[in-house]
Image 1 (cartoon, rainbow, N blue to C red):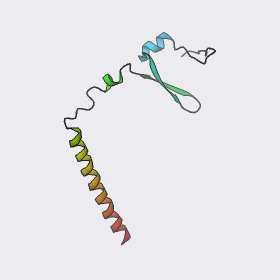
Image 2 (image 1 turned 90 degrees about the vertical axis):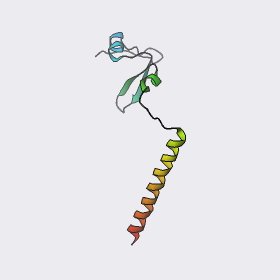
Image 3 (image 1 turned 135 degrees about the vertical axis):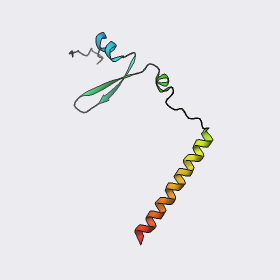
Length: 87
Protein backbone atom coordinates (compact mmCIF):
# COMPACT_ATOMS: atom_id res chain seq x y z
CA UNK A 1 0.00 0.00 0.00
CA UNK A 2 1.19 3.48 -0.73
CA UNK A 3 -0.19 6.99 -0.65
CA UNK A 4 0.18 8.84 -3.93
CA UNK A 5 -0.41 12.46 -4.81
CA UNK A 6 -2.18 13.68 -7.94
CA UNK A 7 -0.26 16.14 -10.10
CA UNK A 8 -1.67 19.50 -11.20
CA UNK A 9 -3.54 17.81 -14.07
CA UNK A 10 -5.13 15.19 -11.80
CA UNK A 11 -2.83 12.38 -12.93
CA UNK A 12 -1.69 9.59 -10.67
CA UNK A 13 1.55 7.67 -10.98
CA UNK A 14 1.25 3.99 -10.10
CA UNK A 15 4.52 2.78 -8.55
CA UNK A 16 6.52 0.37 -10.72
CA UNK A 17 6.38 -2.43 -8.12
CA UNK A 18 2.58 -2.33 -8.18
CA UNK A 19 2.41 -2.12 -11.99
CA UNK A 20 4.73 -5.10 -12.28
CA UNK A 21 2.93 -7.20 -9.67
CA UNK A 22 -0.46 -6.59 -11.31
CA UNK A 23 0.79 -6.93 -14.87
CA UNK A 24 -0.28 -3.42 -15.85
CA UNK A 25 1.04 -2.63 -19.31
CA UNK A 26 -0.51 0.55 -20.68
CA UNK A 27 -4.21 0.63 -19.88
CA UNK A 28 -6.44 0.17 -16.85
CA UNK A 29 -10.20 0.28 -16.49
CA UNK A 30 -11.17 2.87 -13.87
CA UNK A 31 -14.51 2.27 -12.16
CA UNK A 32 -16.27 4.76 -9.89
CA UNK A 33 -17.37 2.57 -6.97
CA UNK A 34 -19.13 5.28 -5.00
CA UNK A 35 -16.82 6.16 -2.15
CA UNK A 36 -13.72 4.69 -3.85
CA UNK A 37 -12.44 3.71 -7.28
CA UNK A 38 -11.35 0.42 -8.75
CA UNK A 39 -8.62 0.05 -11.31
CA UNK A 40 -8.53 -3.16 -13.33
CA UNK A 41 -5.53 -3.89 -15.56
CA UNK A 42 -6.43 -4.34 -19.22
CA UNK A 43 -4.44 -6.60 -21.53
CA UNK A 44 -2.34 -4.84 -24.17
CA UNK A 45 -4.01 -7.04 -26.82
CA UNK A 46 -7.60 -7.88 -25.77
CA UNK A 47 -8.16 -10.03 -28.86
CA UNK A 48 -5.20 -12.22 -27.92
CA UNK A 49 -6.78 -12.72 -24.49
CA UNK A 50 -9.99 -13.94 -26.13
CA UNK A 51 -8.16 -16.27 -28.53
CA UNK A 52 -9.66 -19.73 -28.29
CA UNK A 53 -12.65 -18.62 -26.22
CA UNK A 54 -15.13 -18.88 -29.06
CA UNK A 55 -14.40 -22.16 -30.77
CA UNK A 56 -17.52 -22.26 -32.93
CA UNK A 57 -17.40 -24.26 -36.09
CA UNK A 58 -20.76 -23.07 -37.39
CA UNK A 59 -21.20 -20.32 -39.94
CA UNK A 60 -22.95 -17.09 -39.06
CA UNK A 61 -25.99 -18.21 -41.10
CA UNK A 62 -26.19 -21.47 -39.13
CA UNK A 63 -25.90 -19.64 -35.81
CA UNK A 64 -28.57 -17.14 -36.86
CA UNK A 65 -31.00 -19.90 -37.94
CA UNK A 66 -30.43 -21.70 -34.66
CA UNK A 67 -31.07 -18.48 -32.71
CA UNK A 68 -34.26 -17.88 -34.69
CA UNK A 69 -35.47 -21.44 -33.92
CA UNK A 70 -34.80 -20.97 -30.21
CA UNK A 71 -36.56 -17.58 -30.18
CA UNK A 72 -39.57 -19.02 -32.02
CA UNK A 73 -39.76 -21.95 -29.61
CA UNK A 74 -39.59 -19.59 -26.60
CA UNK A 75 -42.27 -17.33 -28.09
CA UNK A 76 -44.60 -20.29 -28.63
CA UNK A 77 -44.01 -21.49 -25.08
CA UNK A 78 -44.68 -17.98 -23.77
CA UNK A 79 -47.96 -17.72 -25.71
CA UNK A 80 -48.99 -21.13 -24.37
CA UNK A 81 -48.32 -20.12 -20.78
CA UNK A 82 -50.36 -16.91 -21.22
CA UNK A 83 -53.34 -18.91 -22.49
CA UNK A 84 -53.07 -21.22 -19.49
CA UNK A 85 -53.01 -18.28 -17.06
CA UNK A 86 -56.15 -16.66 -18.56
CA UNK A 87 -58.34 -19.71 -17.97
